[in-house]
Length: 156
Image (cartoon, rainbow, N blue to C red; front, side, top):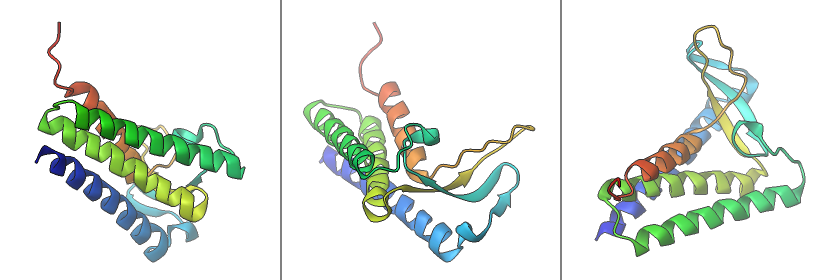
C-alpha cells in the first residue's frame, strides 16, 4: 500500500525530531551553554520558539499557542487528505510524510512545553545567524519543497 510510505516517513521524521530534541536539550543540556559541533557552521544553541519560523508572530499568550497548534494540525490533516485523494508519486508521499511528521513534532513541543524546542544554529562566511531551529523545521521545509517539486503534474 502506497499510504504506508507516507505513514513510515511521518513516523520517522517525528521520531528523529523528538529523539534529537531529547538528547540535545535534556541529555546534553544545551540550555546550560552552547555546544560547538562544527563552529561556526553548526552550533547547538538553546532556543524556545513561541512563534513560527525565525521567531515570527512570537506571542506568550496561551491563545497564540493553541492557534499555532490548530494551524499545524489543520495543515497536517489537509496534506494527508490531499495525498490520499490524489495519486502522488512515491517521492511526493515521502515528502508529505516528512512535512506531517515534522509538524506533529513541533505540535508535541507546544503541547508539552508551551513552545517549540530549538537547538540548531548555522552560520557561515562571516555572517552570524542569530536564529535557531530544529529537525522538525528541516523536515517541514524539505517536505513542502519536495511536494512542490514532485507533485506528479507534468509541466505545461
